[in-house]
Length: 225
Image (tube, rainbow, N blue to C red; front, side):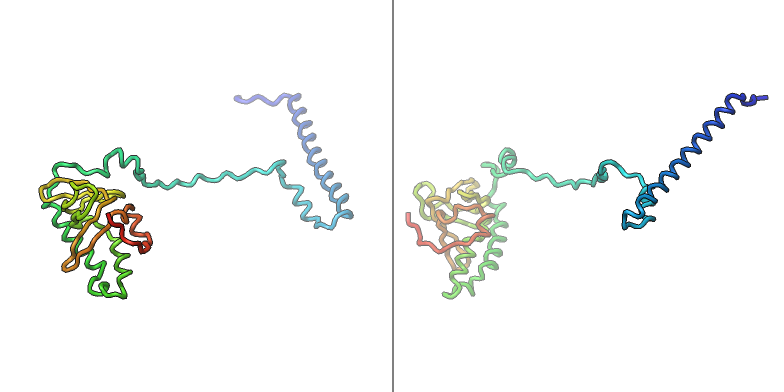
């Protein structure tokens, strides 16, 4: 035989334990009946709801449900202005640039500025204020500029295609393939579009190109040098 019969002592203890457990279940049912009889004349609540409430496990404190971790969106990293300066993204090499390679850029700029200004319609007296606003807000990358007046005599007569505009300077590539940095302050520039000639006062344009496009300009008297 693989199994031996259960000893008599163990059988008796099991029977006693089962009787004890049975008595606890009976006592619990009696306690619930007592509570219902006690509360029924003293409350207006439904007895069935109370009996169902007694069977629930009521926690002693409110446990907040754990939120599932949502997948965070990966944002594209953008270089800050300080990092761009460190990498030299705002600087052009002073050697290796060719005037001929920027000629197509100038042709594109001529098409852009003619469509933007609409000179045939804007040249009339009624639309001149709107024309001045468009000239002040225009993008001058690719424009063929010439310095007509400046407090620094060495800048006068410099002529070239604008390859980079900053808040305070125009950087132009000249016909001799030299890059010149012309300060806007105390300088006057000139450019031509077909049969029209325009004058830019650098003191009015000491603004970043991106900010100038969304800025409202007020009419000012011209500042002579």
